[in-house]
Length: 70
Image (cartoon, rainbow, N blue to C red; front, side):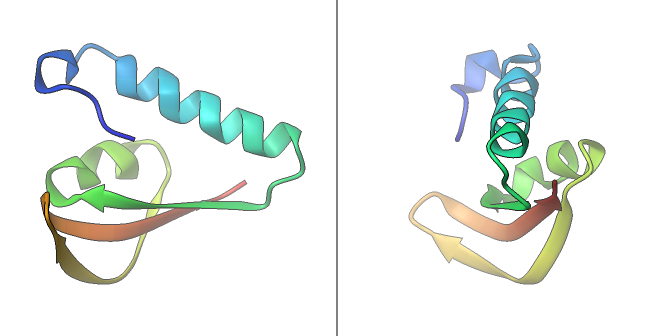
């Protein structure tokens, strides 16, 4: 998921990520993972996500794999 630049810092991303985590938990999920923009790594770390593996590039710039145990 991503937010428009003008929506960043408003809490919209936090609401969406927390909702996804809760939905996965409620439906028996055990783990979620994502391809986080390098600039969003801090956002995910503050929410309890962990880094996995090395960084990589996409058409949208540098990314990192991240995961959270549910």
